[in-house]
Length: 372
Image 1 (spheres, helix red, strand yellow):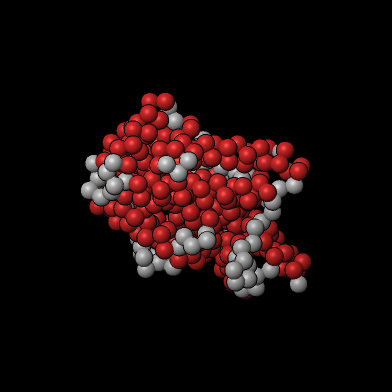
Image 2: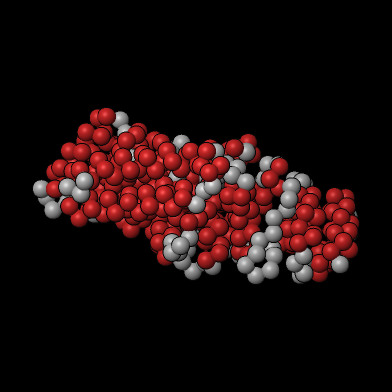
């Protein structure tokens, strides 16, 4: 059965390549994509790429592209097929598909299930193969600030949209965080930013339980927002607690590196907020990175801790100790599970270095609070 379907897809690829007999081919495509078969994932993806080559796509072509992307990525309930060749090439066809359909979504034309699959592809690519999405030339040059695309993403993050669709949009925003939030021109009006930040934050907070992918995307986006003088004004109060998952973001990430290098500026900003959550969690984050901070920043961080001891701030300092201690224990468990050989490879050495750094930060803060 699988081999027959692969042949059918190859025949359909030839039809769409020549742009002949599109209506009959479309009818056949509707039939074959009703049966999720792992064997024709690659063939369906090849068909999808063939359809997307044209610069003059009709409504029939776009319908065919949605059916083809369904055949390429949609497996049984809870499963996501992955074409084996997709990691070897730039995802320009997927970007073109998203650009068109996010524009439609923002205009009120719903193709949510197809968009969800297309949104998941870059996330899986980046997660499974550890390929930075922004390393692709087509991704860096893509117009992520397009008004229609931005409107589409805003629409998807609305609370009444399906969770799977919102999750895909969240991960996409995290992948392009350093481009989206560091844009030279605002991509939303202030009231739109506030609404988007609230919708995004509430979705992440409600979905965090035992989901490391959600945690990583959330903290990545928070660093991106904090870096931007425009976006940081709109960070939802409850979203600051995402800094508890700071270890999920690599310090070489552009926005995270910038924030740590400009720690004092951000301390001043959080002091001026109408709530205490920003200062509480940003200051705590500086303790997580204490050993790698500039000496001037370290002196300020220690001074604040001493002042907090005399001003009923011990509970927050103990919270930071607790969070750092939990991370230390988790990393130690990961190291304990490694074989002797794994402890000596690059991953094992990286874990050990992180553990030593965090233990040092923990002891520094512990001495101030009297816990060490």
